[in-house]
Length: 147
Image (cartoon, rainbow, N blue to C red; front, side, top):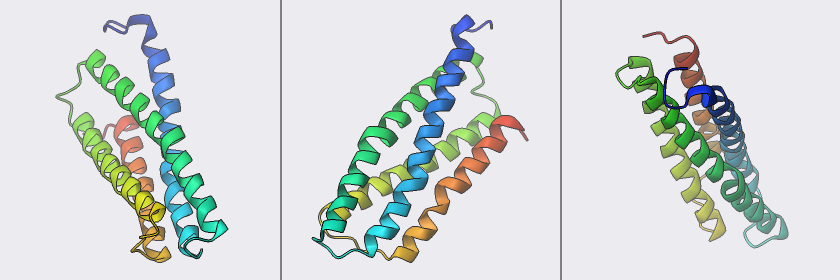
């Protein structure tokens, strides 16, 4: 490899992919927890357990994985000097959409924490599809590079 990452490029890529997998696992699981949380009565033991699970998932897995994936992804893009590539620009746009979903998920977790959830289980079932669709688009953009 000719970029500044040199012989470490493949290691950076591997750790980036591991972080992306951890991030996506959390992003797919958190709204599913919201679905189940909707069915529990506020203040119940079950509701309190969901609060702990949601907080730990976000803080211990999703957030750190997002940081690692972002930093290493930017390093690889800089190493390749691919900023002008349309596929990378589209990937970044999809990544920003995932970031927006992450922000919404974080807000909804705080709403559940305060027993102020305003959405139905059906709503969260639909929201569970957002990360999936973004992931599909990103994988196609990175592997196929359709443009």
